[in-house]
Image (cartoon, rainbow, N blue to C red; front, side, top):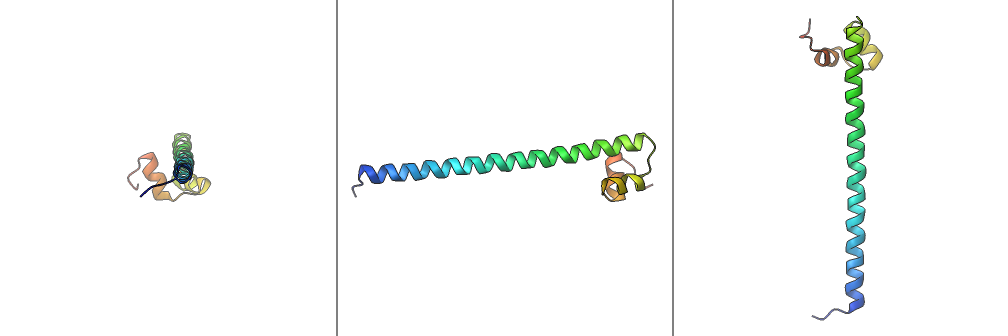
Length: 80
């Protein structure tokens, strides 16, 4: 079957547009994952600093909006 040059150009243009849209979506998704990971790491560091300053796991959990179990996990307590 014979395709015209115009049809081929339209095909490649659509292909390239779709490829670029997919690339942009991937970049945005990666950035969101990175932001989320960074925030999680920041909260963990804050919890560790609060613990080092003598705050209880209950206080830390309440201030950071996490469960006591999560705080214990972050600071390395075994449920004590």
